[in-house]
Image (cartoon, rainbow, N blue to C red):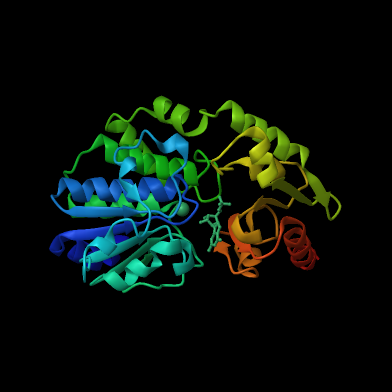
Length: 328
Ligand code: 5GP
Ligand code: MN
């Protein structure tokens, strides 16, 4: 079924020579793994690929081949007058807002391609491959690569695919863990992928400052709605006190949703220009993507996010109000 839908993308990638691949802002393992798998594959076909991301990739992904090639939007293309890519490929980006400053690249392309697994995807490209049933975008990229060349073998590409699937499924534990995700993982292990090495690099590879940040975030825990709602906070002051420059807070919100009886957990992270980034996790009746959409965000039923144009305390009030109505 999906194989048929991939064919317009395959056509464009086979015909074209110069591509841009764009990762979403606040990149995670799925988007970085997907972008690097596709980029390495295309490089191996002799194509040129510019990799764009507004924000720095998480440090734990530094081992992925080609990760140093990510550039910030605007760093390159201005030097080439009237340059257009044969295609711009957006991966794991549910809407144009997720592209950040890279959104202007959509206008510098003969063809735009959107490959994603978010049900909230707005179908903003010329070719849209959106499969909410897929565990991850990396799963879709794997299928695309297999269909383009079934004999292709590259361990760096397999490591990137595995990183995307493993991180987006929480180590094959979240509700988006599909038989297909396991089948691909099984296939990659058959090819010789070192699961032990990747698990260590992806999940068991923290730093002292990050553990100190976790301690502060846990100390910020607030419970609401008869302990059905857990709020956690990461402020700029916390990062400064610890001396952490990076702002990767992956996994912290899970401490809230893991509490027995909690149906929605939110991590409020102080962002630029007085805004607040909210990470949402749910179990039970609340659909996280519906809650996030109320604030212009999106995501999945069990994991979603949004950026609220207010400080942390105001953002908490707004989310709590919306949640109260949804928990009725
Ligand atoms: P996380 O909380 O891990 O950053 O994100 C959880 C999920 O929500 C991911 O699938 C992510 O793509 C999505 N998400 C997070 N923030 C936003 C946002 O501001 N807008 C949209 N549309 N999706 C988001
Ligand atoms: Mn994803």
